[in-house]
Image 1 (tube, helix red, strand yellow):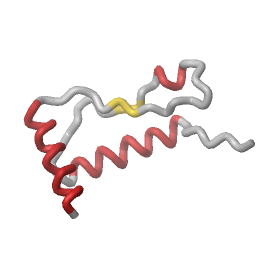
Image 2 (tube, rainbow, N blue to C red; image 1 turned 90 degrees about the horizontal axis):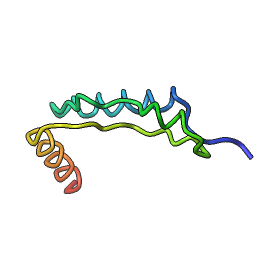
Image 3 (cartoon, rainbow, N blue to C red; image 1 turned 90 degrees about the vertical axis):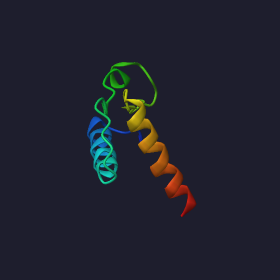
Image 4 (cartoon, one colour; image 1 turned 60 degrees about the vertical axis):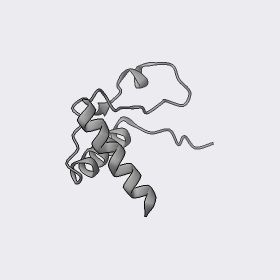
Length: 73
């Protein structure tokens, strides 16, 4: 059976894609990154987690507004 779990490169591309998409809306998540401990664990398959990180309330509200607007479309 083929292994479809994400590689570190896949997750890195995902983080870069998310960062670019958020930037289109003027949103920056300073702690956005690949969650490296997810690859160090013994998860089967590897988790391939993205750490969204902390943000202030203004950023959280901006993100919520963008998501609400996208849901209306």
